[in-house]
Length: 138
Image (tube, rainbow, N blue to C red; front, side, top):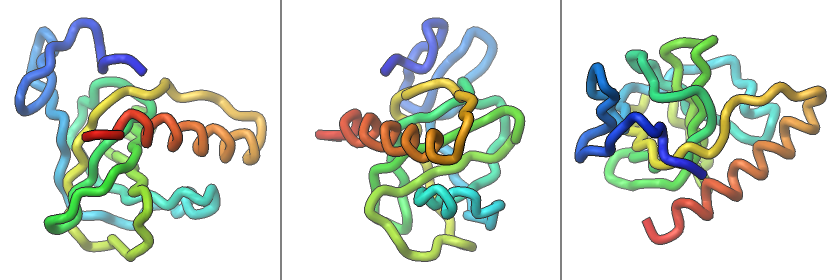
């Protein structure tokens, strides 16, 4: 796992990349997506965000729902600009219409191309393991 970028400096409220501040937390109301995550045993809470996002890929994160903070992982892909997908570990309630805050922690990996659904499912499991390990003690 690596910091978000070598040319970015962490600050209290986000990351400063030579031109502007990029936040490390995003707040919005969860909306229904394509429900692809459910097919992968990894349902996601999708929120709309204002680009830019630091870097496409998977991140460990914390997700605040009401006053409770959950560990999780998020995925951003600039081919779907403005959509941040976040999976909350150990959470099974409906989040549609609820406001959440996603706090980005650590970059896990860049997007990959998969040759099968099973290969993608296995990678998601590995991403979850790495994200959980990264969040221990936070």
